Amino acid sequence: MRYFFENCELRPESHELLIDGRHVDVEPQVFDMLMFFAQHPQELITRDLLVEAIWDGRIVSDSAISARISAARSAIGDNGTEQKLIKTIARRGFRFVANVTTVETNGDTSTKCGDAHPANEQELTQRVRFCHSADGTRIAFATIGAGYPVIRAAHWLTHLEHDWQSPLWHPFLQALSERFQLIRYDQRGNGLSDWEVSDFSLERCVEDLEAVAAAAGVPDRFALYGTSQGAPIAIAYAAKHPDRVSRLILHGGYVKGRLIRGTSDERENGQAWLTLIRHGWGKPGPFQQAFASMYIPEGSRDQIACLTDLQRKTTSPENAAKLRRAVDAFDVSDLLCQIEVPTLVLHARGDGVQPLDQGIQLAAGIKDADFLMLESANHAVLEGEPAWATFFAEIERFVC
Image (cartoon, rainbow, N blue to C red; front, side):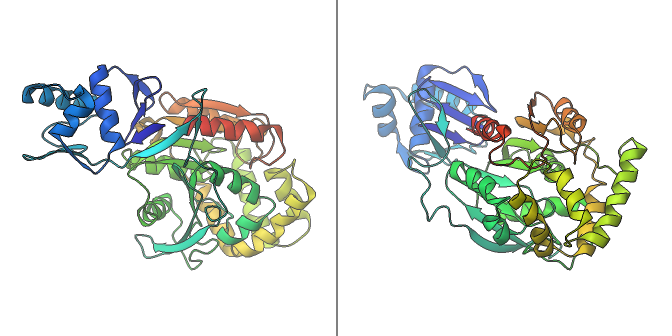
């Protein structure tokens, strides 16, 4: 079993402490103390219990105990003044107040996020709830699965209920929720969230994510997954709340939207798509064929056919165009240098929505980011394609 809290990970099988994914040297006795605290979060640990667990009941001076407590605090970024993780209870002992998440390990030390049992039918039944963003906009969010929490930043074209039944999205959502506790939400103007919205700016979208993170009741830290225009939203959130994000995953994202990128061809292409959306949204015909060839060129007939139905249920042609115009003007170029959390960037080689160069720019602009190129032409990774197994194996490795 491995133990996660704040930006820390304890690996008892290798006697390692990791901070933000990096090994930190600690004395064996200090590691044992941290392990004991992580195994008994929120409990009162008396000095007698601590001496029995760490020193096998031998006689130990108060100064020796205090020195080990001080070293343990220092190792995980705490101190005797703040006591944000290890609190001293006067004349009683200590209490470890961090929110601890456990992850099961098997014999080869690979990990499976979640409880020590497979996700059961009840865990894979999503629960839909509602909250309100800072400007009062109603936001719908859903929780599925068990294990380490992963929040998916909202993106264009989602519907919480419809996606869970969709041949396009259900396999993807099922695969994530079998590995993690997945929290996702419909973007403003979209799905089950408020459609009567005028402000689709990046700032408002970040406020929507803030509202969901608070309402969903996740621990202090969670992994944040952003795909497509969800990537700049996730980046902006992680830059603003580095204390809340343990891992940042960016898939098919971009630094600047196509309406403000350098090439005139992309700007013209963006304007053309806005016109097509206004006139062809939710209607079978040439628009749908062009839409599918751009987003899922390798999709099956069923997957492509469901796009039309998804458009009709997701939002109106007017909102679709407003959302598209807003997200095509997102710019997070000034925020990349502010990202301090471990980051994984994944991008399909033949992505027709956001070119591969945008994924490379993301990875190059974020300090120590990992980059993985997926051998695919699809903007959304599809079940059955070779990139599918690579995608989920890499995300599980990175988060766990």
